[in-house]
Amino acid sequence: MDDALQVQVEETDIGSVLHVAGEVDVASAAILRDALEGIPADSRRVVVDLSEVSFLDSTGLGVLVGEWKRSGEDTSPRFCLVVTRPEIRRVLEVTGLTSVFSIFDSLQEAIEP
Image (cartoon, rainbow, N blue to C red; front, side):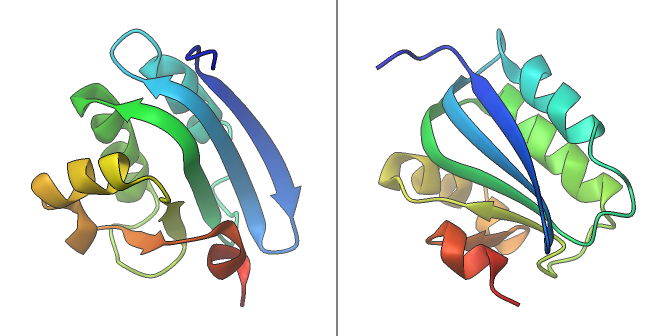
């Protein structure tokens, strides 16, 4: 698998869905940050699908926290993550971010009203 970070933004009826694939680290986090900053502030919901992310470091976590703050710092599903890989969920658990983010096990769960 190619670990170069790829971010694809999809506008849907529920808001914006970012499909992220590869490694989110100090070398690539700016790609994710730029994609998130391009989402309209009035988007009803922002779903970051991390199911194809193979690695997430502290820089990537910082980007996600920054967007959570920009979205209003609440635990509503306005800004949420899709996490399917145990190693990515573990990073979020160890850092205490599972209590900050709305996290879903599948994209379908995240986009349901």
